Amino acid sequence: MLQTDAPLAIPLWINGHAYLTLAPAFQDVRNPYSREVLRRTPLCGAAEAQKAVEAAQAALPLWCAQLASTRAALLSAVGEALAGYSGHFARLIVEETGKESPAAETEVSKAVALLCGSLSVNASGAAGVVGIVGNAAAPLLDPLLLAVPALMAGAVVVIKPNPEMPSAIFALAELTGRCAFPGGVFSILHGAEAAVDGLRAVEGVSVLFA
Image (cartoon, rainbow, N blue to C red; front, side, top):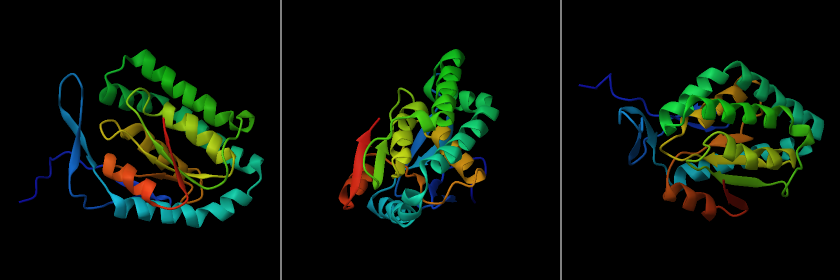
């Protein structure tokens, strides 16, 4: 019998949609204090990395052709949507990282400011597919500090969050879907080293570490 009360697995975000996969293993996402298992992160590998990159590559020509002002407007819309859910995002960060609420709220506020001020961000890098590996320090903000300049330069991004704290950046991907963000421009690939190796193995993908 299926255990309906088991922690839910977090989907990937590929081509503008949640994408479920049967990963060979999962990482428990625990509250660092209570040790309660909140969610499960699929530990993906080369096949899922290839799928995410293919969707990103398909989206690249249209995204690259957009005016910088159009890209900035879409990012700003995501930032405004994030501001409307700031409390929810701060709670996700608190329960997965153990940060105090003020620190989590500050992280969300900085992410909102970054997205809403994207037109003034110094675009960096060439247009292409950029893989971004998240960290435990700032699971929402730090990937965005790399993603927003890349997106403003006309690149598309595949973010691999820290598997122990993936929820905030995945929830942001969901907001991109609500804000008419083009599919494939902002993707989430879950996993550990095998997922990073999968990104590195695809020709033309630049991998950056937050």
